[in-house]
Amino acid sequence: MTLNIPNMLTLFRIAMIPLFVWVFYLPHHMLTPFWVSLDATLIFTLAAITDWLDGYLARRLNQTSAFGAFLDPVADKLMVVAALVVLVELGRVGAVVALIIIGREIAISALREWMSGVGAGGSVAVATIGKVKTAAQMIAIPFLLYYQPLSLIGMRLDVAGIGTILIYIAAILTLVSMAYYLQAARKQLRP
Image (cartoon, rainbow, N blue to C red; front, side, top):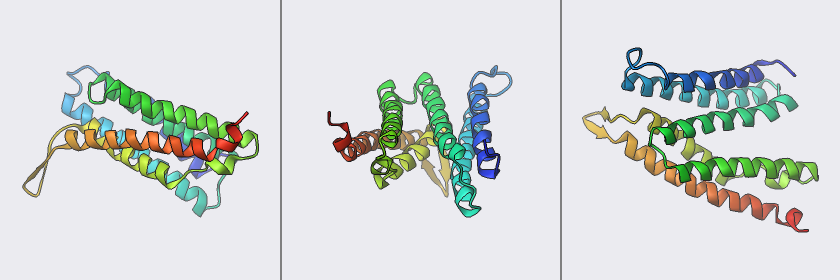
């Protein structure tokens, strides 16, 4: 394992997952529901920032490694799965939406692994549709975690409503991107 700044950020992101989940199980006399939502939102947002930062630094400092290439997407998926499971338990995301997103992540990760094993990994590299799906998902989840209305410049912002719309958009893009990746791998999938 190469221990460099990007990999340390990825390990830090993985270490934040238990903290993120733990916030929801604190006794209510320690944190009110508002503070639970705010803390979880901040932890998830920090994790999302470190996800961007570790990739940026790996390229900028020329510190890419096989370990980092393996661990970074695992850390991302673990944090998203933890958030979706918590959101389902809180009744803020439907189980079907969570299953679509989680199922796609597992299926596409397995497809990429298999395609890499047969020497065709480049055909299922991250595409623009996957990036747009990830952006919608990474914006929706903090909105759904916070879930409180906000007032901005005299306007009331329906955070829960915006998060719900975005998570549905992310679920639709999840299905579209999965179809895209399966189409890209079609030749290799034929018996």
